[in-house]
Length: 191
Image (tube, rainbow, N blue to C red; front, side):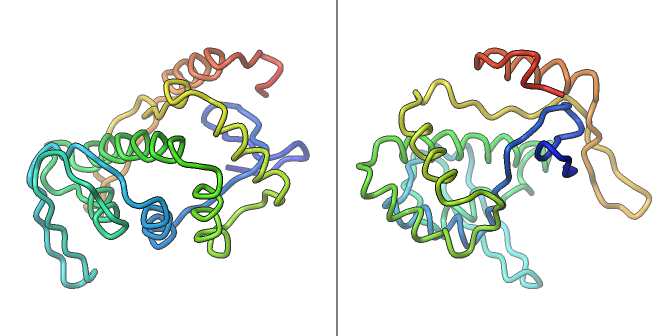
């Protein structure tokens, strides 16, 4: 993302954004705990141990009620997916859809408690009134209108052995515009 005079521009899609919010894993744990946990269908047993990161993941397949710690394990797991990071992205989208539905099922006081649990740690350039407007808009939208999409591209391995995702710009523009215009935005909303 780069900052322009009219806000942030997501260069891959050519879309102006009004602001940003950065959520780290401790924020996620606190938010999930504040809403009383989230029910997720775990596709397989997830077992992984990495002492260097102090990371232990041990989740059983099936419908599971995750607290904040379990939610962190679920969104971080990647070693058992055939396509590693892309499989993890799919799991993260599943989690975010489930979490969004859970938040929408709450009473307003519970939503504000969840936000209060994370506001001090979130990184954002949004003002408090903008945060309140965003939460109110989220609360009045249907769960079906909230979508999480992985833009087209491919996983590549660099010379160092590190993996990264190379975005297909044309495909990303097509999918991004289809998703945005399906939400009722017009061409003038994009740069």
